[in-house]
Amino acid sequence: MSTKAETVKSNNVSGFITKYAIYIVLVVLVIGIAIYDPRFLSVSILRDILLQSSTRVIIALGAAFILITGGTDLSAGRIVGLTAVISASMLQTQDYGRRFFPDLPHLPMFIPIVIAVVVGLLIGLINGLVVAKLKVPPFIATLGTMVAVYGANSLYFDMKPNQSQPIGGLRPDFSKLGTGAIGSGATYSIPYIVIFALIVAIIVWVVFNKTKLGKYMYAIGGNIHAAIVSGINVNKYLIYIYAIAGALYGLAGVLEAARTGGATNNYGNMYELDAIAACVVGGVSTSGGIGTVPGVLAGVLIFSVINYGLTFIGISPYWQLIIKGVIIVAAVAFDMRKYMNSK
Image 1 (cartoon, rainbow, N blue to C red):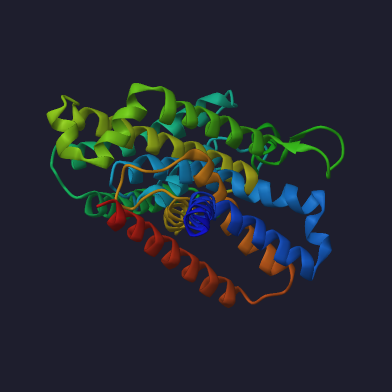
Image 2 (tube, rainbow, N blue to C red):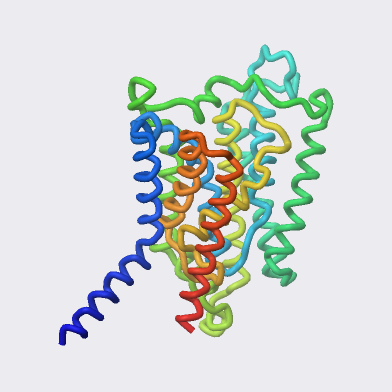
């Protein structure tokens, strides 16, 4: 009898660890770094980590849409770069000496922002059409888009009179989106960009859990053939999903330009890999059909803690890369083990 009770207890503990592994890892990381240097638990450090995580959260949530359908998106980072350049190029101060568009009048801030987000949406739409209509595997389709978007961004960035000079001199109202905050004092204020990321996360949670699009997204990723048989218009919803992801990348590009105070055509390089890694570590299955918003947020925070925390205690960036690589491989191996067990 006791053996049976012990078995049940062991299964419960194992199930708890499996279900909340990502959050346990995050807590252990924070505690480990804090033991080495207690200053890591200060409010200002937490604020800095959240600030650096904000745009990465939005990119990772866009990537999660694609991963849950069983696909992958390699174009995310380059879309971020293009939309950062587009928004920054139209939101420079009038008296800046090296304006991208010297004769451009003072535009309402929302116009360049909307243009940049729509550009991201349109590129995502193209990805969706290529995947859904032409049946090109998502990896190849988005790889082609990644290369093409970088080329287009470089051509735009090299236009006269800019000719590949870093874009600076951004308007204060635009920069405030990325550097401003609610509240008094640098330590206890809440950055606008963190609030934007939180709002996006809430909206995405609602889409994932409370809408027909979310329900069909999980169905497509879980078993695309069953989804087709059940009457879901898979092609239509795949196009929607890729377009939404593109819009999120566009928004992240705008906020990244505002946060850093400028842009170049190399912005966003490798961001897609960080986003995919954060999603996988956060429990989004590489096989599709599984993933949650809280898991994605935890995945992004884990990598932010690794980047910021290990730098804070003086660990070499090369060791950080090794640690990140081990975590990614372990997460995928764990995910595949769960997938095989479910089979």
